[in-house]
Image 1 (spheres, one colour):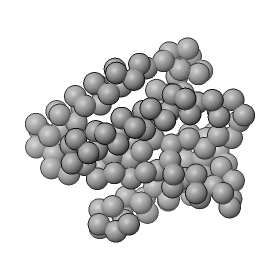
Image 2 (image 1 turned 90 degrees about the horizontal axis):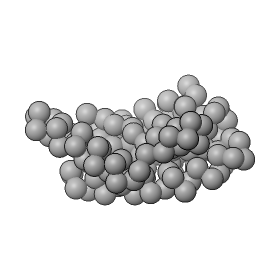
Image 3 (image 1 turned 180 degrees about the vertical axis):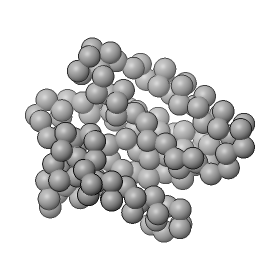
Length: 129
């Protein structure tokens, strides 16, 4: 099971005034993982939510995203899941090309962005770093 959860919660805070409290985010994510384990899912891959600010106002989204990233890391450890730190991976990739080439709106990956995610998933499944 692979999961990429969190950035839409962040986005809704800023575009719809619909914030997701961190404790609610943690509890609902934990419950999803618990149910997955109970249903027999053996391998869980948690992909870190990411943001590549393409608009100045998106820079303030970090205040909501960074704590959710911390929750993802905690839950990956708690459930023994594989973890892919996409936020840092995308930030590093954007240094040389700019963020729009990876996620034109800062959130949804381009074809190249999907390719980068696929490469990271393949590496994680093969046990590479």
